[in-house]
Amino acid sequence: MTAAPALEAPTRPTPRRRARSGNTLTAGSALGLGVAVTWFSLLVLIPLTAIVITAGERGWAGYWDTITNPQTLAAVRLTVGQSLLVTAVNVVMGTLIAWVLVRDRFWGRSVLDVVIDIPFALPTIVAGLVLLGLYGPNSPIGVDWAYTERAVTLALAFVTLPFVVRAVQPVLGELEHDVEEAAASLGASRTTILRRIVLPALVPAIAAGAALSFARAISEYGSLVLLSGNRPFETEVVSVRVLSHIENGSTASAAAVASLMLVVALTVIVVLDVIQRRVSRHG
Amino acid sequence: MSIDVRNITRTYGDFYALDDVSVALPTGQLTALLGPSGGGKSTLLRIIAGLDTADSGSVSIEGVDATKLPPQKRNVGFVFQHYAAFKHMSVAKNVAFGLEIRKRPKVEVKKRVGELLELVHLSPFADRMPSQLSGGQRQRMALARALAVEPTVLLLDEPFGALDAKVRKELREWLRRLHDEVHVTTVFVTHDQEEAMEVADEIVVINGGRIEQVGSPDELYDQPANDFVMGFLGEVTRLGHVQLRPHDIEVAVGPGRAGAHAGRVTRLQRVGFEVRLLVELESVEPGREVAPVSVSVTRSHAHALDLELGARVWLTPAVGATTVPAMVAV
Image (cartoon, rainbow over all chains, first blue to last red; front, top):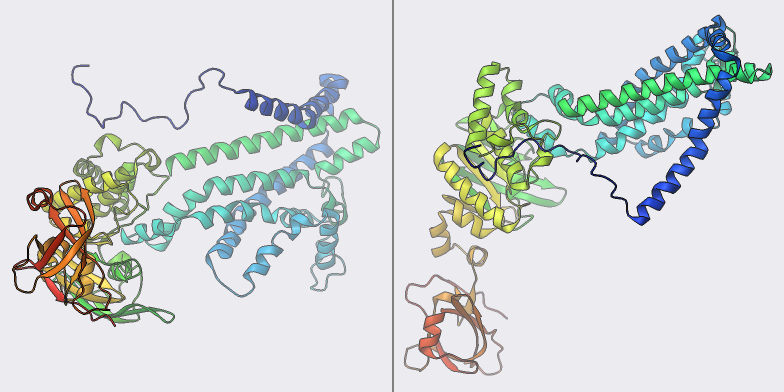
C-alpha cells in the first residue's frame, strides 16, 4: 500500500458480529451457561436422544418399516401438508390482524387485542369442542365439516392463530412513522411503502411467528381428537398415530415416528431462519 | 417566490398550532424557521411537505397550488430529526430509493448515487448499513437521499437536533457550504438561534402559532420587531425604560453623562474574553424594586476601568444600541 488511507475510509465493511476470540466467560456467566445447558439437556437434549435410541431398538429395517408404513406416511403427509397450509394462512391473516390492531383505531380494539389470545389459552380439547359446536353435525349455520380434512385445517388454524399476530404486533408498533413519511416524500406510493419499507422490516417477526405456528400445528392433538375423528388415511394426524403405536405397546414404533417429526420440525425451522436472514440482509 | 404559504391555520383540539400564518419564502435561499418548542414551526414545515394537512389556507410551491397534493406529488425533499433511515437497506440503496421507484435506468441511478455520496462525503460507506454509521453520517445520508430526486425545495426538520454539540456545529457549516454549491431552496426548522443566525439567509421567527418577524439575521438582531424576537435572538436586560443587549451598555466609573443610572457591581464573572457584571441600580424611585442589570464588557475594558466587586458604576445605553421599550412592570 502506497497511499495512507483517508481518515474516514473503512478498510472493509465491518462484520456485524465479531469472530469469537477464545473463551471470554467470566465466573458469573460461566455459572449461568452451566445452569442453562444443564437445564436444557435435562428437559430437551437427553429425552430427544432417548427417543432416537428407542427408535433404533428394532434396528434400521424395523425403523424403516415403521416410517414407510402407508398409514404412517398418510398421517405424516396430512400433518405436514395441513401445517404448511395453516402456516401460510397465518402469515397473511396474522400480519393483517396485527396491522389492524396496531394501526387502526376502532371501537372494541382493546377487546379484540385480548380475545386474540383465547385460542392459545384454551385447553385444546375445549377448542375442539368449540369448533365442533359451530362446524359439527349440529352446526347452527349448516356447515358440517366434522371428521373431514377441512376439520383438521380448521382446528390447526384455530390453535395457531395468535402466533404470527403476537410476533408481528410489537415490531409493527415500534416501526418509526417518519420512515414511511420519508418514503412518501420521495414519491413512493402506499403499496410501494408497504412492499419495500414496512414488510421487509416485518419479515423477521413474521418468520418467527410462522416457525412457532408450524411447530404448534404439527404437534397438535387435543382439538383434533374431537373434530377430526382420527380416520386412518383421511384425518389421522401424526400425534394420534404415535399414540396408537403406544397403545399397541410398540414404544419403538412410536419413537420412530416421533423422530421423523423431529427431523421435519428442525428442517422447517432452519428454512424459515434462513429466509429471515436472507431478507433482512438484502431488503 | 418558491414557497407561498397563505392563511394557514392548524388546530389540534383547542390548541392553535398555527393561527392564520402567511409567509413567502424566496427561491434559492436558505431559510430558517426559528422559534421555541411547540411554537408551530415543525407543523408549518410538515404542511409544506404535505405530511400534515392544514384546516384552512393554501400552500403553493413554485407557483403550483400544492394544498391538495399528497406528499408524493410535491417533489419535496424532507429530512427528519431522527434520520428516518431505511434500516434494511445499504447506504447506497437508501440514496437510490427515490430514483428506483421512479424507474430510472440502472446506469443513471448508479451514477447519480455515486455523485451524491461524493457530495455528502460518504463514498467509502456506500455498502454499509445505516446502523453502522454515526448520527452525523446518517443525517448526511438522509440528505443525499432527499437530494437524489432533485426536489424543488428541501425541507429539514430540526436536522441537527439529535446530534452532539461538536458534530452539530460541523454539520451546519457543511450545510451552508452545500447550499452554496447546490442552490436548492432550503427551509430548516430549528429552536437554536445561533444555528439560525449562522446558517440562514433569512429567518422566520414563529411563536405561539404566529409569525413574529421575517428578516435577515442582521435585521432581526439589530431591529427586532418586539421584545419576544429581541429576547429570543440574544440576551436582553433592562435599563430604565428600555430593553437592550448587555453588551450595548456603556460603563463609566464616574458620573457626568446625562441620564446615567448609578449602581453597584454585585457580581463579576469572567467567561473567556468577556466579563459579565450584575449591577444593582440605586433606585430613582425609593421603595420600588428594580431587577439588577446585566452588563457585558470585554476583559480589557474591564481591566482599564479597574472594575471589581462592589465598585460604583454609572450605566448608559451605548450609542446606536438596539432597544425596545420595556413593558412596564406593575
